[in-house]
Amino acid sequence: SSLALFGDKARAWLTQSTGYSSNNLEVTRLKGSTSSAVFLIKILPSQQRFVLRVLNNARWLREEPDLAQHEAAALQEAQNAGLRAPQLIVYAADDASNDAGFGAPVVLMSYIQGEVQLRPQDFQNWLTSLAQTLAAIHQNSAKTFPWQFKSWTIEENLKPPLWSAHPHLWEKAIEIFHGPQPPFHPVFIHRDYHPANVLWQQNAISGVVDWINACHGPAGVDLAHCRTNLAAMYGPEQADQFLDAYLTVSTPSHYHPYWDIDSLLNMCLPTPSFYSPWQEFGLQLIAMEVLQQRMDAHLARVLKRF
Image 1 (cartoon, helix red, strand yellow):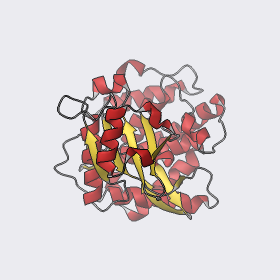
Image 2: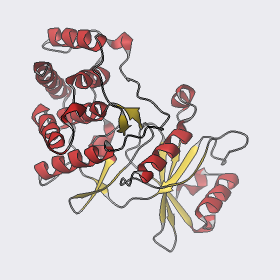
Image 3: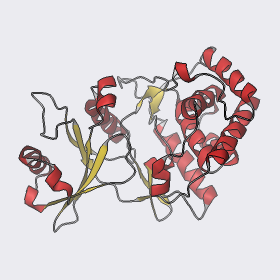
C-alpha cells in the first residue's frame, strides 16, 4: 500500500474525510495519470472506494493555483447536471486554512466502477456511445461556471512542421488559426474529452473522469480534441465517424472545423506524440511516421470542410 507515502496529518485528513479509520485504508496508485498523482483508496474489509487526486505538479500549479477549487467546482457542476461523473467528497487547497497534509492541493471524490476501453469489439457502438455521452455534457449551459475556455495552442510553436509531407497544409492551418474565431454559444465543456478519460462496463459507458479542465466554452473544442485523439489512435476516418455520430444527436452548430485546427496545432506542433496512457490501457505503440501520416491526413480532411 502507498499509504506510507502519506504522513500522520494526511492520514488523519483521510480518516476524517472518508469517515473510516486510516488503519482500514489501502492506497494504490492508479495508472494513466500524467499531470498529477491519482490514488485509489479502498476501505477494508468493505468494498467502499474513493479516488484521491494529489496536485503535485509544481509548474501546473504556478500557472493555475486554483486547480483543486476548479476540479471541485467542475465535479459539482457535472453532478448538478446529472452527468456520469465522480461525486465530490471534499477538497483542500493547501493553504494555511485548508491544508490536508499532502504537501499539495488534493481532491477526494467517489470511485466509478469501470475500465478504459481502447480496443473495443464493436467499434461503431463504441464511437456512438462516446459521441452521445459528449452530447449530453453539452446540453448544459453552465452559465454561472466561472472558468472560461482558453486555447492550449502555443504561439511560439506555430510554424509548418519539418516532419510533414504537406507543410503548405500547416501554413494554411496557422493562417486560419490567426483569423477570427467562429461565433459560438458557450456550454459546459469537459475540455479533455478523449477515450482514456471514459470508463466502460459491459460495453456501456459507466462514467467520464478527469474534469479538472472543464470550463464554459465552445462545444466544438471538445469535439475537436476528441477527434484529434481518435485520428492519432485509429485514423482520420474514425475521427469523422465520431463527428457524424455526434451530429446525429446534437446541434449541428456545435461543430466548426476552426476548433479542429486549434486542436491539431496544439497537439502536433512541433511534433505529435504517442500518449503513454494509451499503451497502459492496451493500445499498441504507434510508430512516429504513422502518427505523422495520420495527422497530415486528418488536417487535409479538416481543411476541405472550410
